[in-house]
Image (cartoon, rainbow, N blue to C red; front, side):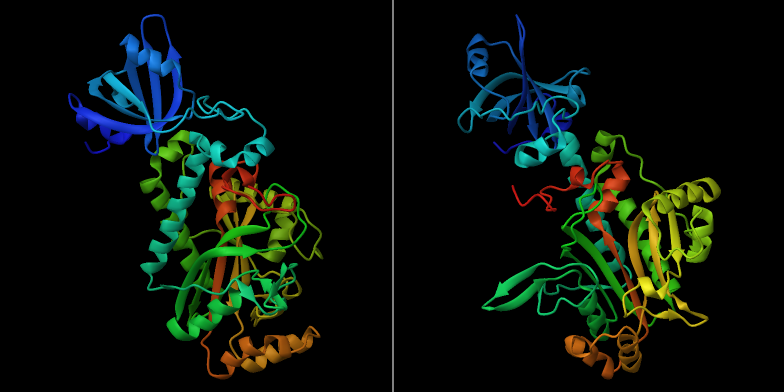
Length: 428
């Protein structure tokens, strides 16, 4: 008999089916016992009245893996309006050792460190697994949106020979007796691949050795990167980003509706045109000094509140960051060279995306490096492509875990990360 998943049971009323999953909870009453079985699709309620079956049920523990053969019976008070009656219950392994928290409770009461220490079981809780389902749907939406815009998915090296890509600290490692580093982003490679496909994207891990110990930083996270050629300026990139976010949220609604419901989340609408303010205006709105070189978290929160109040938008572009705060490959604003053709996208008052237009002429790269007092040699392999013709281009990068955390209202990015890696954690 083919296995039936819990969400398929309402279509099987009157039929004998076989389900399998984990013992989510047992309720042993005087005249009847209830077995709640959890599978990847949800919960199924099994009604036990046979004394022999009940005796076997009493030997089981929560999280024991079982197989149940029973008849599907309508019951409006049961999960999904059905329950299983007349069951036989067969363990598919030894009784499980109960985890250090109750997975059947509506919310995990264990502290976050305890959950992370016991991640393989904590992630079984419906609220924790719901966040990961939303994450998976967001990635599917990212890919689908860019595929529809003729982007090509690429896969770039995560071990590189130079640590010169950005100001962030890097993780060094031994590469057959020589030095190597974990890549901080696919930035250089995705730019080079614009010279091949014009429009590219990548979904992959990036590594930042910055010693941050905050609720919004990880040492390894998943970056959703895109780069496109033949742009006029950064505003073309912003338009593609807007469409990509809309596609991601639409796919989350379509593919992870049950997960959103579990967490009580209503996805935001992406405006047809996301409001945008220049960095200098953003400082005024946030009440920051006019000579502030960057936006602090408090400034971002103030801007998020302003965007919601003035535009009814959960999203806000801040454009024209000072060139001094942007990487050397950033294209300056031709009208105001001290400011960049770059942007950040804030999502509910938190920086979610960084992007902009890049330099595309070889001579401009040489000048940019010279202006910052940096040598050309470490970038030789990267810069060589610009000698052979590259179009005006730009791109962006979305931090997946940060996006999901903000979407579901998680207080800590680790709540939506399966196995986080940070300043203190390398296990499990």
